[in-house]
Length: 528
Image 1 (cartoon, rainbow, N blue to C red):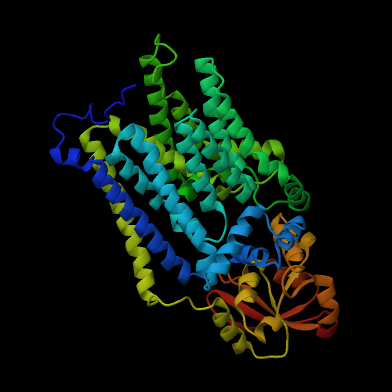
Image 2 (image 1 turned 90 degrees about the vertical axis):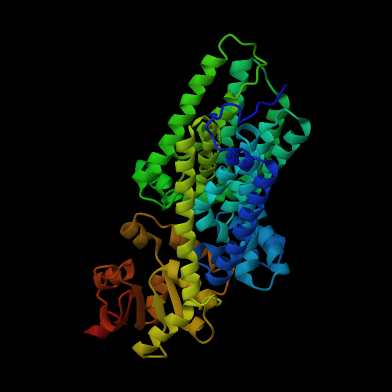
């Protein structure tokens, strides 16, 4: 069938230079520039940002002595990703000496793959100029600004799903269905939550079955192959649910849905919801238009309905994920449905060719302005630190604790999210003084979940961490220091201050600044 010209319905008043911009050669050069910039910016960000809690978890599991050691750590719920991710991180760490770059490079490359796949998908229907514009949209999202330089699998998962979308667009080609099956399987080898992103593909193919009265067996075989890793890793997933499922920190609720759309575009939820709603309404309008256009036509017409359903479902992935989480009694966060971000640029790939000239120019100008402001802020921050390698967070902590004195006392770091990165970067003898306590029942009463405490308890078996059960620590240390963050109004932000005061401990402030505080703590019998 003759491939339609995406520029055929452009207004005759369109400037000739826009037709020039629609050339494949120029658009490809623009794509190369986008990818090169994303790679360079990602490497700079990776080299200047210390690991946070989740990334240290990645480091601990990936650095186990052997592959069976990685499986053993996951079998004890030391972390929550699928084994394939840690294998990739292990290989990358063996090739690159700088651990921050080594563990983040696969994710940076994954984001570059996302840009390319968005371009390829949208060029097929919208032409190269609009495809380039759509390929730039992910740079304005959380996927680029955080997850592309985080040593967690989410950027790679989105890359696998994006490649699967490109393959599905060419269904039922045997070669492309092999690519789709491998991509889906790879995504589940990286993260169990990639299963959420397979739902839109299933809905799109179901639309094919219902509208064309046709079962495309190659597509369903690709789906079946894609879920094989979930079957293989089911014991690990079951263990995670057993350990963390009852009181998981991220519940499936409406506020999480609003937060998800807001976090995707790093904007207040109403603005992000408006963006998503606009793309959703535009796609629905196109579907109705398509239904009228193809009314009465033979079923082998060039039907875009499956692609429309696919993009609609991607936009709706956060609510779909919440429904699935409710049905399966699990938790969910925005990063588990991060593939939903793909729905926005793909939707605009269908919408842009149907807009008038002024609307397209306005949309392009807004996107460019947003990216300029965003990137100017990033490079200004880099200039402020002189493009040096980051300062270890432990160095600032060590200086602050030194102000308190008492160099022979252990220092309890009240928040595990702070403790793990500090313990990772701290040098001797500081790492031996630094302590973290777990008490799941107390955290459950204080925070409504016990996820952090249970994970720290599991991690201590696979790393040199000074993590203790509170009663055991309290029986051996009647006097110690407590380090805690401070919230905006100057009150202790974490639970251990309240717990210790409730149990009769006496807390005396030794040092304080705008963001943190350190106490001298004496036990109940010593305070009398």
